[in-house]
Length: 396
Image 1 (tube, rainbow, N blue to C red):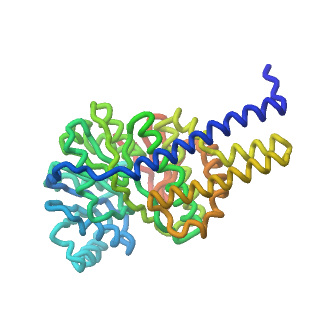
Image 2: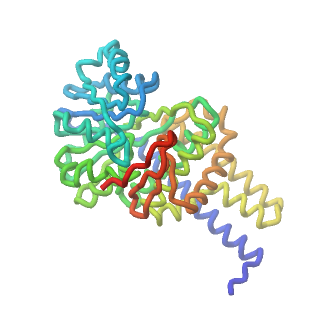
Image 3: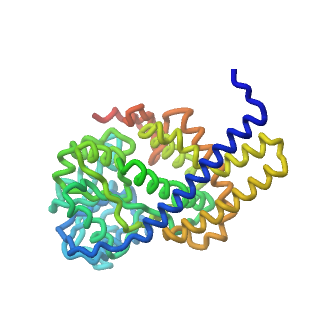
């Protein structure tokens, strides 16, 4: 039997803390290298592009997001926008026409309930109208700079690049829950993507942006192959890699503008996110606990019977995390006014660690007012609707 004496437990926790601290140093290095990348000096690569934008609703935030796509410094592109509510179409179209977007946009009424994944349902409705061979898929909550298309498309000049994706950060939040969500995105998730990309190569894409050739999409089974999966972006990236291509990360960091979020919204979204990653990357998600530096320091404090050195270790860890958060938000164009909300960092760390534990307690997730059960291969089955409607069958 293993004799878990106080000394052996402290030795084990000390080793884990050293490994965790090293991970965070690597994370900071990867962010520093990425943000210092220079523009590609090669001749511009400007093929015609079709943007596919599935929307769930029309809000002022969505209008501003779409407006950023209308104001691209790019010679030839179109944007096809899908809305599930026909009654909102005229209002949305009028709002963008007022911003001189009409010449580049087309609209489609979509039916998000045709497949288990509502976003893929909308994309299936938009895809047949795409005129161009380069496609960019992006979520409705994304806002971009004027050079977005040019920078995203550029890596596709390399025939070995099958898809391009973008990092995203959240620059603002209107609620306490939204601020915690933004910190998780800016300080934990996005930097970890860079570490994974460098150590293992990207085998997934992010829904913030996926740019690829039409031929590549068709070669990996098309959008229909993603209809039954929760993480359609991950599945698409995985299929592209399995087809022998690689995924590039664009140097263009897009903005993720969150809707107003309650604490229950935060909990449901983070639990869905955690269980999705756990299903798709079980080993990586299991060992992601190594990043919980604050949590491991708190466990060391408890194991040392709340000794003076334990309190000092926890205090130094919290200070390090505060400074790390400031660096990451500044370099990745994350939350503005970070030091006003920096006190949330230890709370965010504790919450993120709790969600990690809870991700192993079930396979049910909440998404867009619906409840799903996610299978071990990533397929999802809708089990109930918040409005009491009948559940959908599993998509093929």
